Length: 579
Image 1: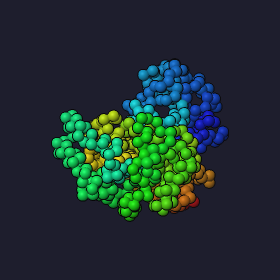
Image 2: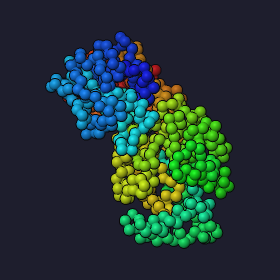
Image 3: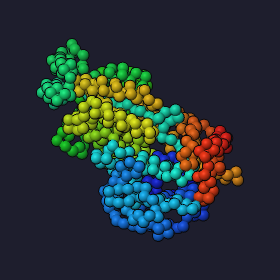
Image 4: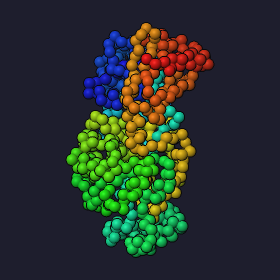
């Protein structure tokens, strides 16, 4: 059990951190024994624990007791932990290294983390406040320059590793389902449903320019093959016949995605009201935000029915929901009236939002939001692969967006070649494989056709995901799964039979099942995984190692890994016992 001593203003950040790092914890109760104590408060009493982790740039009363001396303070710095670069957005304190402590986190400014090994307790002192960092990441998010760092997940991983290094066993509900490494969520923002609706407007003329002058430029710089150049010119030449209905509309997205994603659930975000640019939209192109279609168009309804039949989800591509509860409700009602869906999610058109958006969307009745991502790049805006609850919301959950087609290929954005884009995507896939959570892709409606021709890249990307231990799901399915994982509670069983933890869940059966991980003490005996669907409480007996002081488990340091593994496996005998 982890005991938390935090500042009063950090309660929400603590609670959300431990929904992402799903392990037994509680706010510190004086007189109760804890295996780990995590503290950000400045005034700390003497504590009996196996591992004490103290965060913060302020002076701590415990520093003198543990022989820790301050060096200097900084802001906007980065730290390094085992080769991982981690941005710190608040104040950072560095420490003096006098030979009695062990540096464990460094920065360009000096030592940002120290470890003090005592007879009964290990102390780790970090020069930043983890819960202030959590609040920043889940509200303002990360700037573009750190988009590639899953900062919040790294904070979780650091704490997990330090607990294992202190020879303390750890029970965790993993952020990925049993039998899978992570979730994959395929999403599509539908801004256009064909070029036929655009005659002599800015959309048509923009396509003509990009398909002629722009196509030649892309051909010269090696971004467009001769074959695709010819296809682009043929598409421009066919425009009069498309408008007359004599030629196929090459921008229609649904046929392509239904074929490529056959038997894979996907989510389509649809515009509720046509020709509405929306309010409070900044930029010179704000008036062009309105679309030429909406969900009530007769020619769209057969495609919507086909998507639902295929197991896909239809969500709102919001216009004004990000700032107006009333308009958000109207946009939700517009889609729900056609689809009959009881739970409706949203992603804002142009990814608009502000600090009040989570609360606004929650009050409007949305099941989740899928807007947290970048237009300019790919990566982790909130610093995590996991579904999370943004600050300002009570129940609304956020599905993070990680990979967007336009961010990869637009000249005004990353402007990557396809090989370079594949490398960037592979990095995100590899991290999802390690961290779990979800990898969310956004491929727009006309990205498969001229003049973009990002179809082959997308097909390869989907095939790569299919070759891995990935669970595909709609946005609503994935958010629901993470919501049920959040509903799991840990209870200490006080019955005189040692340290026992009960997992309790009251709700619908969890499918796919949760993956419960038992991390062995010291991390040298591996870890054991258990599948659990929440149908009945399950009790885990950890009394072999759990205890209030380091002396209770110090014997592990001299135990051979094979013997430790055998002992650890004995604790699994209690798995399956029901309360």
